[in-house]
Amino acid sequence: MQLRFLGHACFQLTRDHVSLIFDPFLSDNPFQIAQPDDIHCNYVLVSHGHSDHLGDTVTIAKSNGATVISTAEIAHLCSEQGCATHAMHLGGKHAFEFGYVRLTLAFHGAGVPGGHACGFIVKFHGKTFYFAGDTGLFGDMALLGRLESIDYALLPIGDNYTMGPDDAVEAVGMLKPGKSFPCIIIPGLSLLSHRMHSKKRSNSVSPSLWKS
Image (cartoon, rainbow, N blue to C red):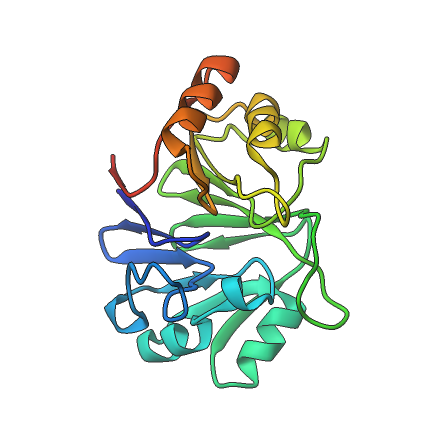
């Protein structure tokens, strides 16, 4: 199993012939870690409609024949542009070939009229990942930690538009993941990873490429 960090909030999760990508903001990312043509995947998971998360979803989904998994509003938007989609809503869970996806609450703007932002809990070949999107800290993260035994939490630390570092530390305490990966990166990442590990007993990892 491989988890790749592709900048901002974009992660790609791969095992054998199945690959998922989260919030593929690539071509307009100033760090230019990857381009849409570099991505080969089966599923694109989109947390909301802001351009730095929806990003290159349509291009990647159409070029790979991949299925977009998101809220009904985002799925409809992508379907109108020729993508295969699977629409879900907050609190829903659905089985896929790799395991299942559960849509979770996320507290921030949706980026589309009438829609909701979301996070994802993904059971992928026996391991459980929580992708938080751009959310602020919320108390029901503790409920997520009770409902699911989370192996890996992918948490924003950018502050201003998302949780900041201090709130991310609190989130780790509620979620109780085996490992945590910060995203929406800020300076001082190595120090933050140490804080998330030492204060909340979760093994925080500076994201780039991780294999299990």
